[in-house]
Length: 135
View 1: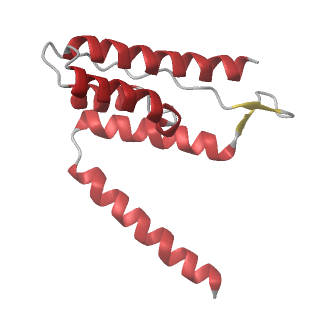
View 2 (view 1 turned 90 degrees about the vertical axis):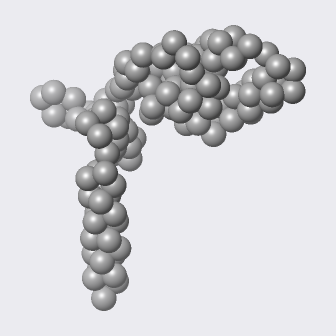
């Protein structure tokens, strides 16, 4: 009986995902697919090596190329960076990013400067993720 309950839950989740996909534009759908592939690789933990045998760690995907608009708010910048780096665990960056945003709000740091700093934080976390995989 349990497997039937699991099937219903999976079917419901699949339907919700399909509903979301139908509402997305082509760019957002591409981002969703890249993230879903990343999650699938992370869940499996490793991918088979060519020729069989041992497995290799799933490769860390490259960041998506999303151009920075000329005029961008800090919140829009954070959203863009989250889409650019879907492979990063945002909870690991929460402290650093919230401190940067808080400083911007409290001290009036220039928006462009704040976004530059946020980009550095995301790049550094990505570099660490890649380095950890190469070790």
